[in-house]
Amino acid sequence: MSQARVLRAAGLNEGVEDVKLGSVSGRRLLRSHYRRLKASIAEGKDTLFREDASSFNEIVSRADDLYSLVQRPREQVADAEALLQISEAFLSSIKEIRRGNTVKASDFVSGILRNFREPTDLASDQSIALDWRTLGSEANFIFHDAPGIHTMLGPMDSEPKRRKIAASRRREKGIVAVTARPETVADGGDKQSHTDKNIRAMFNVLRRFGEQGCELEKLVLSRDSFSHTVENIFCLSFLVKDGRAQITVQDGKHYVGMFLFYCSNPTCMDYQAQILWNLK
Amino acid sequence: MCRVMSRIPQSSSQRHLPHRISQPPAHPHEPELSQVDLPSEEVERLVADVMRYMLFKNHQQHGVPVRREELVQIITKTYKTRNLSNHVIQRAQEKFRDIFGFEMRELIRSRQTKNTKNPQSSQGAAPDVKCYILKSILPEDLQKRYVITKDSSKTSSLTLLIVSVISLCGEKVPEETLWSHLGRLGVKPDAEHPVFGEMKQFIDSLIKQRYIVKEKVSGPNGDAFVYDLAEKTLDQPVKAKLDAFIAKMVKKDDFTVDTPMVS
Image (cartoon, rainbow over all chains, first blue to last red; front, side, top):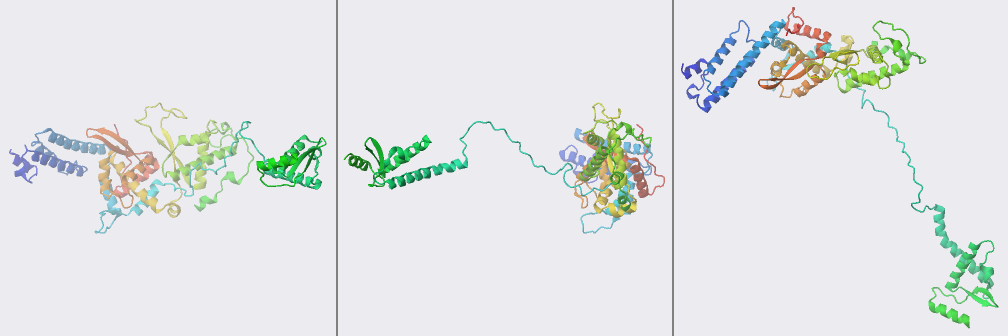
């Protein structure tokens, strides 16, 4: 049988004259025919093995005719795949018969389309539209799903946030820095004014005594407190340095009196002048 | 719903001093309460925890079965008393029925090929996994009025079609077979459906909710996926109603429940 006759018998009349089976294009064409055969097996799988159907014989004869054109392994694989598909369809059909289920899925789908299909607008893309709402009402009474309770918001283990109680650390008793109390810090500022106050007080005392002054021991000495004595001497030293007081020695006693020659910011020449003046 | 709401649970209406449960069981199927040596208030608290967990899970992952192990973990977190889990779960089932009109139904998932571990269970040597789902047991007219919403109806409709096709195609339905039947109904795997959106996500949700199960099988063409019914669909009341619906659609009076496959 010539190759052209075979192709015509297989219903592959398209471009028979152009097919050169030894060529790459011819083999490509043969493989496309096998793909078409497999698609037709898949489509008619449910009706393939009915008694009244002749599609099984047609498909098998087509497969045989195509196989006679096979020359290379790749086409042979395509042929084997087609035969596998026929075998799988046969197996599923046998399983259904053994199960005793006379209803096929295709019949069920046809029944669904018959009962729930809605007329569609031709302009729309969707070709098939079903009445999902009516179908859903049937389904709800089959599954009886419990509704979700929409008041359950947030994570299940959520609890009100509790404030973390900060754990206090025990600090080591080591003096890192000198701690100071505010009153003592304030005293630091007052110390300066406290000294000024003492100086002013001492100067007022000296003013009362005038130029003659008073005894040094009576002015600065404090019999109750040595620190007061030191402070008084400290204040007197400022007065002497500023030239507002003078210490003289008379009859073996020290006298402190006001110094009328008072000048602010005395220089060392002024001190020399004071000493010279006192030495006169 | 008004019938359900009018009933006040017994524990909240009567104030009891805490007492030990040491009474003999009222019904023969109840566990021996003398072994549940806990105050009734503690038991009620555990029951409330289990119920709350079930309701939360049903809201977070609607329709996904809750494993018994998770409920037992809640119950035995504080108390390790024997038979406490059974008693608490049973009480929770009764309370769901009385208060909410829900049935806390137990389903059994059989562990098959993949598990190579030793079977572990707290009750004997059963390797199967028990899980629980909530179902509404209200009368149909009350469900229509108060329970069923538009969204839930649409989701249930496609679920019904998918499980019906898988039920009719037998076990281990190849993916191509399923989509070829659904394609006739305008449902395609790659295209986004105007009502249901991404179909692959929808199928995944059905697998999570245990309506169907997806397995990988290796064949001459490589790995392929097959679908089969899961325990939620194989539950007897659901299966019977599903078969009745299929019979109605094909108008077959002598349609029978599928007989198990003979290997």
